[in-house]
Image 1 (tube, rainbow, N blue to C red):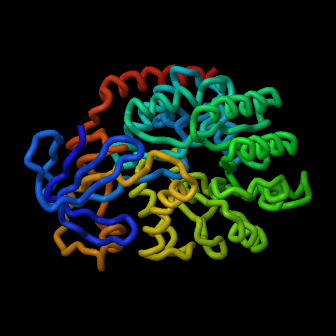
Image 2: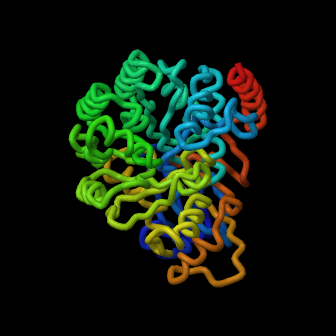
Image 3: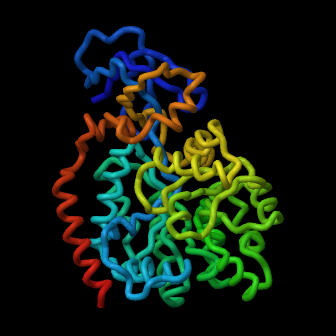
Length: 422
């Protein structure tokens, strides 16, 4: 049944024009929205009264990690990490090797629920589970679809657990891309051999998609590349043709030379910044200077709240980045542009959030940016519509049993933590 939002104020996601109207929402991936002057005199629509509410297009997470969902509150690692590489080795690579199908499903269901409750209806995810690779992307896809979130998934191909695991990651990717939109995932330059990198880029070209890879998240990525290959990371990726697609996503991009920035800015590829993760790992600060306009935002698995990520990027960026009120919103919305430019489906105009924003000051086009930075947050998300379907109503998920999924996730978390201690 089509939805009708009555008496709400629609904020255009690009022009920021405010329009008070009734909005008719079509169902489906290709569904549209229509603005009506009068409420139709029939009962074939499900009606939501949005008087005093603000409506705008829902949000996109440009870089997430489903596999980290069950890490919250887990015990200390066997060794206290002293640098970023040890954070990976003793925390994340210990965790991801313990994941099995049940844990992956629980992680994906929770992540999807957290996303939609925060107004995020499309997730670009970068997954890793070295001992449960085959079928993992399909598990995540089905979990997201149960909740009502669209997705662009990839598996994090890497040589770090052996060439057989890298090959299995390539095969999982190839199989998944036969029936789904997605990307070819790679971990980072320092865990990928030339042979694996070549195969991944070839697969991306064969399937008309892009690469999704962490780039220069820590200085150690560059040090390894120079010592082993005699060049910096972006030069290596360029030599293998990884930057030729407008679908390619480069995560982090903190430690780049001026030449590398120039290469990226003259390529069609996209950068995704993850401010809070960078702070947590103490690897550095993102600065957009010289990187061009193709910059979007992600959470790197820290959480599922893109409004929170945007605020972090803005405030941290006051000391370290060339970011302002308009550019933080542009980066927030650039994931929309990335999806649209590349023909990915699942984030059309019928993906909406209804915001119960109780501002004590005037709110309009001219001062939107100030409200975006200092006012709007995920607590204001009241209703969420994904591909024309109401998935969150009055802050409650309609598509799945949230309590049951949380209960199941806690069971899987305990299993995961026990395995990690062995």
